[in-house]
Image (cartoon, rainbow, N blue to C red; front, side, top):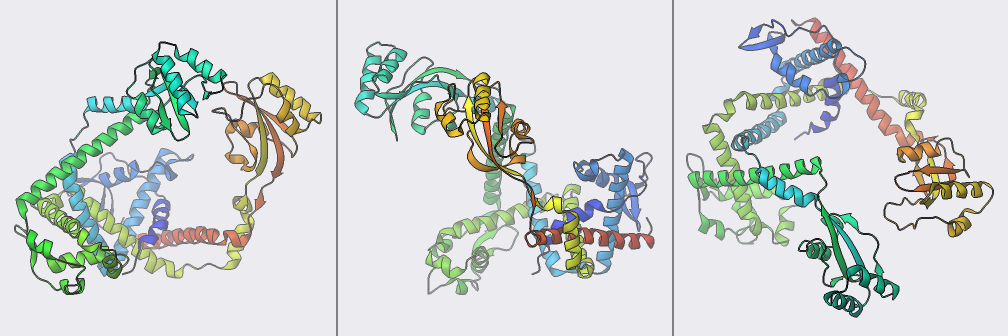
Amino acid sequence: MRDYSWVSRVLAVILFFIGTTGFVSDKDLPTIKGKKTVATVNDEPITLDEFNQELATLHQGIGEGQKSEKEKLSELLKRLINTRLIIQEARRMGLDELKELKERADVFARQTLRDELLERQVKNIKPDEKEVEILYREAIKEWKIKSILFEKEEDAKAMEDALNGGKGFDETLEKSLSDKKGKGGEEGNYLKEKDLLPEIAEAVSKMKIGSTSAVVKIKTGFVIFKLEDVRFPENPTVKEQVRMELLRKKQKEVFSTYEKALKAKFVKVNDPLLKSIDFESKEQGIEKLLRDKRAVAEIKGEKPITVGELAEYMKRQLYHGVERAIEAKRLNKRKDQILEEMLEKRILRKEALRLGVDKTEGYKNKVKEYENSLIFGAFVQKAVMPDVKLNEEELKAYYDQHMKEYSYPEMMRIKSLAFSKREDAEKAIVNLRQGTDFLWLGANAEGQVDKNTKGVLNFEGNLLTTKNLPENMQKAVSGAKSGDFRLLANPENYFYVLFIQEIIPPRPQPYPEVREQIAKKIYGEKIVRAVEEYADKLRAVSEV
């Protein structure tokens, strides 16, 4: 079977860029077959609903720029007209009768039918807002913890005994630090559960503000900590994520209950037969079972699922071959799951047809839209692409004319020192510009912030792409030369001395490196133009 899916990479561009014409006002539009119509193409209507649906998707492209609203709407209408002309031509060519297209359309239609049925079951489902609030507060919860880490368990136990004896946490912590028995003790930071070790998270979740923990064993030693505070910083994004997660969970539960009810209503599985089927047996073997007509599951009012059909379905799922699956002893383990999948598809389709889902406008429009996209793709592949050619000269000419687009970006090799005060950073820059060695200054300058301090930026001489640097840093190094020193000031945090060790200017990428990229771009543009020209010819002999 041929695969037209790769054509979709250029179809979006083609469907987007086709032509302009005068816009038809939405006032006093004619009604055809009960629907407001913005245009007819050879007596085939383009409805206002279709137009508005396309309009709603225009968040980019023709929705941008300096064009007036009327011009944008004109482009959209012309795109719809020309697309309809192309699809009509493709049908006249018989492309809609291609076997591979029909098979893909049928798969889509069946899946969409099931989706539409399930969508009916959950369209009014909403998450419990009380449950949302509970889970949301757990998600945004932050603990302020002050801790000390001991290497030896006996030292940790000694502090725990002191705390149990009535001594204060800060007092015992300071003593352990001064005795060099523990490390840490800095002012506590607010941390989320995901930022904590599992052992710490489990312990702190059971604590009250102001309480201290027992000794907690972790990979690097033994920890005792104090819970200083708990806060719940608002985060609307997280709240919406929690709400959507709960909604999906509830929908899944509804789906499961609904499918079980349908199965109980329509299905009877021959469990003894299913259990006896051995896809891994040399005597039975999957090839022999493919011819087995025994019914492994009966569906009321439908044909039963036979052992042979089960074997065929399973065989299609084995992308790496039957033999490998047999060797791995995976076939028999999967037979129940495979049968469930087959039954789910059959009973959902049966119920959807019973309820007339296939006759709804929503379903029919989705299927029609997909079929049209397949037909359009087949037309482009068969009627347009064979005549689109590329030559090396035009590719090289494009490369020469657009060399800036195909260049390596400017890069800088930067080292940094961080200071807590601006005056210390400025003094360091003065000394460096007067000839002080950067490494010596880094080892001796006062007022520096430890590189391991949380939130400190460290630049260790690695090559960095200039345009990817933070905006304030880009401004700080703008116009710099190799050997320059610049100040990066961030009053809310720290002050950085930046040593620009090396600058690698932008340079063109070699033509062979970008040839394929250029070829795809030019090829796509040529296809767009070819489709536009074809559509113009069709329009000249059509009634629009």
